[in-house]
Image 1 (tube, rainbow, N blue to C red):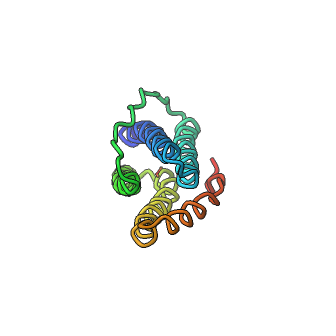
Image 2 (tube, rainbow, N blue to C red; image 1 turned 60 degrees about the vertical axis):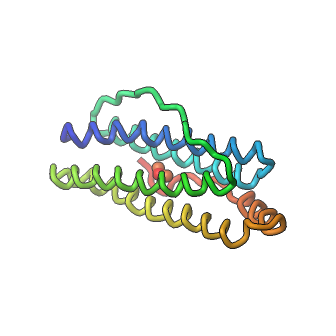
Image 3 (spheres, rainbow, N blue to C red; image 1 turned 90 degrees about the vertical axis):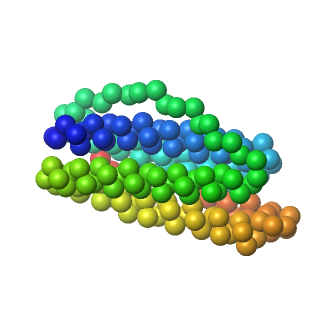
Length: 169
Ligand code: FEO
């Protein structure tokens, strides 16, 4: 396997684990505000990020690559308003999309077709992640302005359930 592609994937494991940590901190923020539905949404988001990291971890091992686990950074975003995590999450997903795209480009340049195919799932997943995060901002703008709307939105987000990734390694 191309060394640069392997290094980027190894680095992405850390980025996905950081994402999990960041989303857990968002759940933490909403939980403290008494918004258990929003907290549930981000707890599940955190689990999905751990799944992403594990898929990359397993993929590298299956391809005889050594994985190096680095320190996961402290989530250092500051949240004051209820909208803040939603906007930070969307910006973060756009950033993650740029990272996945860069690995995809590197795999294509290295003619590493197997990794390109592996990353196809992540390309699609990032589209869903961004659609979800921007959709949440829109809902909050529309309905989050009064107590009743916020209660309804919180109830909706409480209904999110975890499902394992459709990609298996
Ligand atoms: Fe692993 Fe939310 O992207």
